[in-house]
Image (cartoon, rainbow, N blue to C red):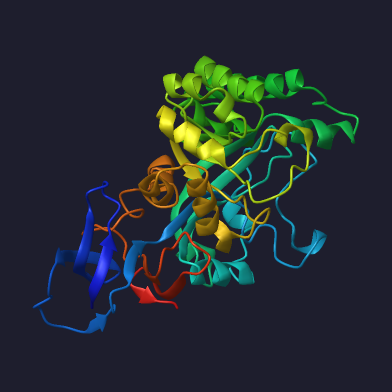
Length: 374
């Protein structure tokens, strides 16, 4: 199949826009794209001059893990019985039947990373999945895609209420260190006695699995970096709310970050410096950023709107689009499959009339793995 008469935003660099072009795909993969009139054969869809964009990506969410319209019955996001739970797998809690998946792909969001919340200093494994499907096993792009860690207020609040460790930031860091030390020693043994926690953390200490570290406050961000340095972790800062206060230092460290959510209230003290300017300041400093709405804090279908609000506060137009397409794909290390329009990549894209980062734009059609889903 070929989509013709479209303005293609390939997201392979700022010069990769094709003002009037076509894109062909087959068996779930992009096969070719070009400029001008399409002269080949096969089934053709006339894009009528609309924009063709890569599927949008959110690198940090809890979609299908905290189900829409339910409280305890549909919330499988935090196992608050043990502060160290690296053996938990997000794929075991994602419910693809949650209607928020349909709302997401109808808005052009075709891929997400989803998994545990931030109650525990080590929460478990995230998975990168497509947003269309009935069975999570058939939706996986990469699982696990990361290991969830958490600094700051959330572990303190949860375990203070249980009168157990951690009640302080020191204890949160100490528990993480203890778990990583044990995993490192475990990984160095030839035939260790099986330990589920150490087994799950072994790819992290070996640098095979990225640590995604929840941190809002600047001091918590630096603690995350400090621990990552100590253990040689590959890491991403998630939320990075006060990143704009320390952008130069984060750029010097080579930090990658998912920033947001910002379309929400400042619900706790560590969010007091939350601002949509964060993305602009970090991007200008040279930090590789993706924008997240942290679904369900902000519903996933508002991801492009949040990128638009960041653009309004100074984020460059290309950078705003990159923050919900190629950048999160790079940060999640799945950019060989998604994030831009290039032969060989998954046929995930949307036909959009108007600016996709504006409220008034309309998503006309959406394809995921070459299948038209809207």
